[in-house]
Image 1 (spheres, rainbow, N blue to C red):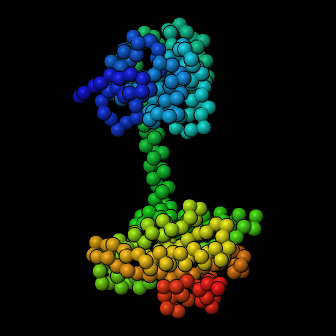
Image 2 (image 1 turned 30 degrees about the vertical axis):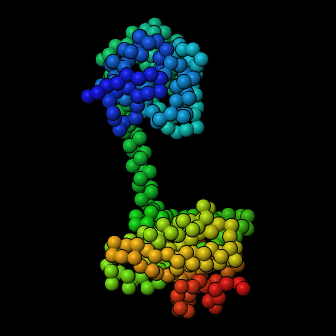
Image 3 (image 1 turned 120 degrees about the horizontal axis):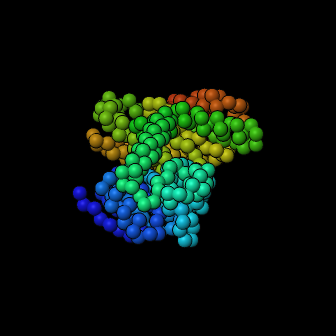
Length: 328
């Protein structure tokens, strides 16, 4: 194990995937003792006062736990603790903070607990006590982080198409309902484009499902690159995709649909079984303009026009029930 001692904004201790401990101490003697006690088990970062610590928390690497003295220049440990607990950053405000106090400093200790301190250790620091308290709070904080990460991963899985990485049907419907609520309140128009890869079954049948998956994955990347940042491109099943266009009327939706159709038509899709040229067909629908007052109605109308575009020859868009391709 190679330990290295560093100053201010440099890590101390072994390389680790765990987050470092930040200790805030202006005494070189105490800082050296803490490094000696903890550096074999944790990565450490040392700063000399609360002001440096606060800057580190907001602009430096993510931290797993804080050990801080109370009496320091520039910003005391008490003020640092208060800022941490009042932070608008969930990661910062929830950090475990261990306070170092003098053995008889009961008043400061009680004040620190009222301000949200997780624990305290007395000076001079006892190595066994320090390691025990740090281990308890660090392990608990890491467990909480892992649970939060797992929860976030499950949330992403529930709303993300695993093949393309785009939002899935569930997520698309949720965002569309939000647009509908905005329309009902502010009368801002929103549109949906439903599009489908033409003759996709032939790709699967001739080149295999792996090539088909590659094509869909690359199709998702292309659609995502063309739509606006405020739009939502989603895969809603099989070779079918949908685009949600907030604050967009039918003319704007037709313009975007044609842009997508042309982009696909110009593109050659690389798969593990060669390069393939495909086209898409698309149908559009707009809240209010098409007599729709629900997301289900809007998707049904757009889907009907999508299949009308296919019946009229594919590689085209349909903006109304007659299969018109533009407003020219």
